[in-house]
Length: 483
Image 1 (cartoon, rainbow, N blue to C red):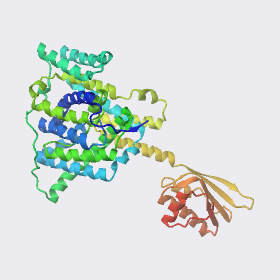
Image 2: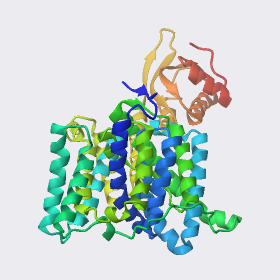
Image 3: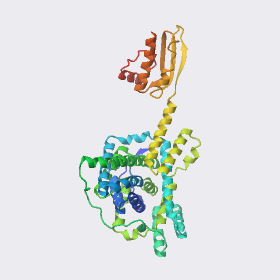
Image 4: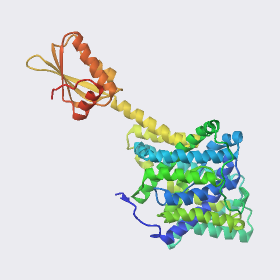
């Protein structure tokens, strides 16, 4: 049973502090990797992760969710940066935030309710697969030390909770493996090998672009695409955290919060970001529940950059790879493998196709949108069935008992249900087992009435429910008085 979160910042302090610190350590290589993917300096991703995490912890609508620079957003930026430069990216990030805030004002958050459960499950499983696949390049040409350290990391993560749950096992694993790597001078790739970390504070910076219609038109396509991808991922992640914690979140507040966070990021030299399900899973599984955990992840990330930069550079990548493998295992909905044979074939098809699209494109938004469209088409196909059962009354009047939904998908078939010239002079159309949904449906009824009128036959419509009657009256076709 879901409940609305009414807990304060400091109701879970110890777990929130430790989980936030764990997330910060995992954020560093991700932010650097996404910066490289976008074709910008690693600090752009790191500053974005700090700004977005801290801001969303204050203005977001889903406690315990981690937002930062993400791969899905970064993948859209590369060609744009090559063509227009980094200043235009900062401006596009600000515009992305403004668009998202307006989406929140317009209550776009409610659209998450239109995403079927099969698509949510597919989203989770596809993301788990992507997270796992993203770790595989780290094993290319790796020595035995790499495999041993990944195995050791996973052993600590899964075995430590059997002894104590006082501290997140992932945090302990990263610390122990870093100490071992530094002490034994192991031949391993480190965080420092991924990109240069500059020990400097982010500063307020107005993008160096002119405020002209031409510039805004240049920024709009990327900003709109980023806004859609960011909101899709954030709302999906919020829904998953709702299920994991059995609590409810404010989706429209989250949409507005994402917008504010991206505006802040753009003004402080960062790129656009959104919710990260991988880091969010780390946070939730480490005990993070309130806004404090998200706030700490951002602040501790900045602390690591400014104060512990030299130590952070020496964190071995195998330790972080081990953590992300744990995340992929924990994210995957293993129960779905058992239920896929039991659920309707159409739902199973939607799940498989959505997973395939996401894994093939590495674009979660495209996968989710494709899944929703496919589900809608299947629903429309199933609903596009309308039948008529015919009876003859004692006085010779013919009654058509309509069953099924009357909408744009069934209007043509509905018109063909009647034997106009062969019917008696009096005809009754009974809608007791049907519903009139749209203007196309009303048009279909009007066509049937006109066909009978042209051959001087009387038609009476009965059984319309109140909603159908109201729609018919609104469109302009007088609702019959029959009951």
